[in-house]
Amino acid sequence: MRNAIVLILLVLCVAACGDKDRVPRHILSKDSMAAVLLDMNLAEAYGRNMMNTATNRPDTGRVADSLREIRVKTLYAQVLQLHHLSVEEFMKSYQFYESHADRMEDVYKIMSDTANARNTAIETRRRAEEMPKVWEKWFPRKAYSRIPFIDGH
Image (cartoon, rainbow, N blue to C red; front, side, top):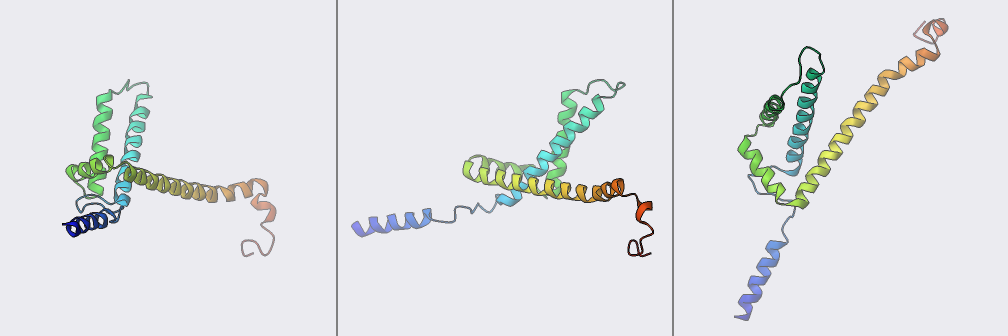
């Protein structure tokens, strides 16, 4: 009897020590969930901004909140379609992560890191595009166009 109890406890300990990052098969991975949620956040911001921009025109008046919600829901559906997910698949995964706060925190960390990396890339590209303009502001092209090693002259 004592050996049976020890065996049961050993099996339970081994089962409890499984991979904590592993999720059930029907649940999105942390990376996939982060990608979907990030796209949904961007879609919501875009949809709300687009509707707010429309309301700033004098001839359109205020756009009802219900129209904003319809637009955002349409964008959500497009995000799910982009990620080849049904609403049910997404909701199962969302509810799973919602009930596992530590895993949801990991998902939000991935989202934050991804958004920061995208912002850095955009800012780097913007600065690279602006650099020639700054250079020409201080040194107009006509001032150095006759120098033989510049522009292959």
